[in-house]
Amino acid sequence: MKKHRWNITLALTVLLLGGGLLFLWQTGFFAAATSLEGIRAYIEEFSPYSQAVFFSVQLASVILAPIPSNITAAAGALLFGMWPAFLLTWAAVALGSLVVFCLARTLGQKFVERFVSEKVSERYLGLMKRKRDVFLCLVFLFPFFPDDIICILAGLTDIKRTRFAMIVVLFRPWGLLVACGVGGSVISIPLWGMVLIGIAGAILFLVGLKYGDRVEACLLERMKKR
Image 1 (cartoon, one colour):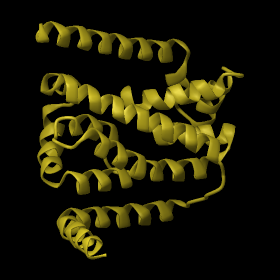
Image 2 (tube, rainbow, N blue to C red):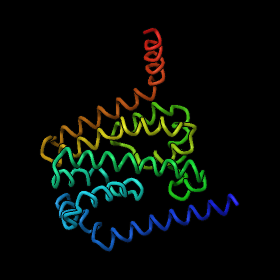
Image 3 (cartoon, one colour):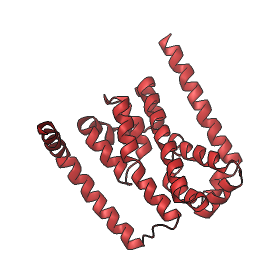
Image 4 (tube, helix red, strand yellow):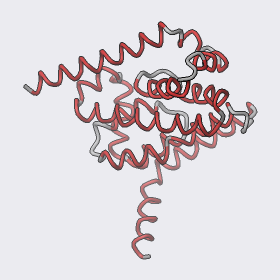
């Protein structure tokens, strides 16, 4: 009975994912996704339902990777402005992260193996199980890692759904906020600035992985004393 339920859930998931991909393909999204202006024009075509389409595209960017949510966020900022695009993106990405997490948690290893390669799983899963909260916070905070795949793999760890949801809500939006700021012309970052940000982010990530547990323990200890 359990195996039959798993097969039905998996079939429905694949059907929905396939349907989403087919819709995006037939409506010309992938052809438009070659530039920010192209994505902006694609979303604008669905006016007066542009916001709903934008939300759906951002949701699909998590569930139907590899649609780049940062790129689509910047395009949304061109169309709606920085803050509306950011809020829609934040809500869609948070929801999508929870969906793939819950699917992995419910359907288990076999489901994850269909969407995440063994090589990628070996690279991140062991580290995620050892470092867990610290690793997730750092991965979501810096734009160098496959966030959406990490959300799937997180479903195989022992982290609670509510804790995972809190980490997603608090740490996933910052890169999206920068993307919306750039797209809305609120923030202008030159190439050399992006390189420096990338280097600084990588250093902080490595330091966080090495000393994150100590920092977390120290902060918790101080909180207990107050």
